[in-house]
Length: 469
Ligand code: ARG
Image (cartoon, rainbow, N blue to C red; front, side, top):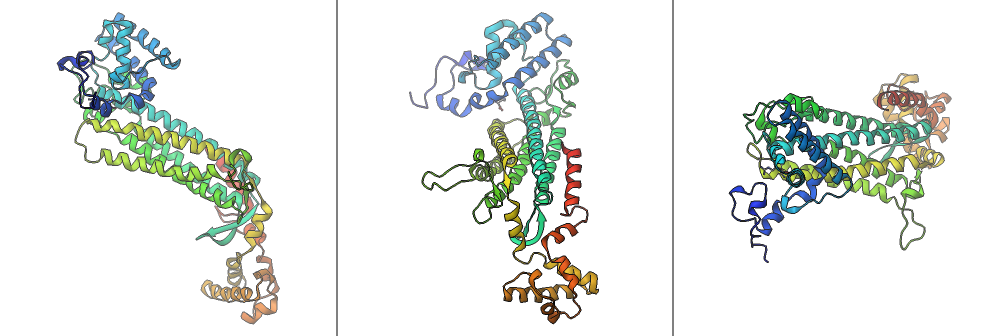
C-alpha cells in the first residue's frame, strides 16, 4: 500500500469517527499520531481524569455509579501502565484517546461519560502543565544536589590558590573554593527561575473545554485544587492556547544548560595536560582506542555540547508558537518533544556534572604554581603605592606597568625584583612592598564582601548551605 492510500473501514472505530466514512491515509497517521511520545503524559492524564470525573459526580453532571465505574477503570489502566502491560495503539492517535479507548474496553458504556464538559484542548494543556511542573521539581532537586557537591569541594578548597582569569589570561590569584562558589550562585539563580516558572505555570486550564468554556455546571476550583494548582486559569481562550509554561521551562533549561556548559568547558581546561589543575575520577573519564595514555573528559565535553540541543529546542518551540492565531491549533502538538528531550538532556547533564564534581581531585600545588606566573600581584603592588605612598591610582598603575616590564626583561616575578631595581623606577618604594607581592597575601587581603579571601569564602559557604541546601 502506498502512503497515499486510505486505511478503509476504521473511520467509525475512532473516537471522533462519527462523521467520517473512511479512516485517515497512512501518511495522515504518520504526521498526526503522537502517542509514540505523548504516552509520557499517561500518569498526568489519568490523574486529571480522576479529578474531572469526581467533580462531574459532585456536581451531579454524571451519576455516582458511572463515576465509580470510571474511577475503577482508571485504576486498572494505571496498573497496566505501571506494569508495562498497557498497549498504546497508534490507531488511537494520542495518549488521551488511548486511555479513553481502553476505558471503553474495560467498563463499557459509562466510559463515554468521562469526556463530558471537557475537550482534548483543555485536557492536553492540563496534562502537559502537570508534567512540566514535575520536570521543574526534578530539576530543582538535581540542581540542589549539584550545589551540594560544589559546596563540599569549595569547603575543601576554601584556601587553595589558583589563578583567576579574565580573557583566559591570568589576572589575579583567587581561591578554588571561591571559583566553585561562583557556580553555586549561578545555580541558585537557575533554581529561582525554576521556582518562578513553577509559580506562573501553576494555574489550571481544565474546564476551558474546547475554547469557550462549557454550559455544564462544572466546578473549576475543585478540579484545580485537587490537581494541586493554585487556581483555574482566568480566560478559557488563553487556557487552551497558552504554551508560555513550556517556553519558560525551555528558557530556564537553556540558561541552566549554558551554565553547565561553562563548567564543562572549565573542567576540560583544568584536566588538560597544560593545566593539570584537576583530575577526574576513573568513573567519569574515558580512554582512547588508540592512545593508551589518554584520560578524556568526555562527560564534561558532552555536558558542554548538550546545551546546544536545549537552546535549539527553545528556539524551535518559540518558532512553532510564533504567529499562531487563537486558540488551539494542531501546531501545538509539536510542543512536547522539545520539552521531553530538553528534560532528558538536562537531567543527565546535571547528574553527570554532579558525579564529576563530587569525585574530582584538585591539585593545589599545580594550581598555586600557575597562580604565581604572569605577574598576578601587579594590582596588589599598585594598591600598595596608593595606600602607602598616597599616589593617585592612575599613576600607581603606570609605575606598576614599568615595574612589570622590568621584571619581564629580567625574566623574574615581581616578588623577585630587588628593592634597588624598584627604587630606580619609583624612589619612595620601601622594603615593605614585598609584603604584598606574594599570592597568599594577595588572596588573604581580598576581604571585601563577596571577595576571595579564604575567610570570606568560608562565610559564603556557610551562608549558601543555609540558603540553598
Ligand atoms: N494530541 C493533541 C496535542 O497534543 C491533543 C489535542 C488535540 N486537540 C484537537 N483539537 N485535535 O495537541
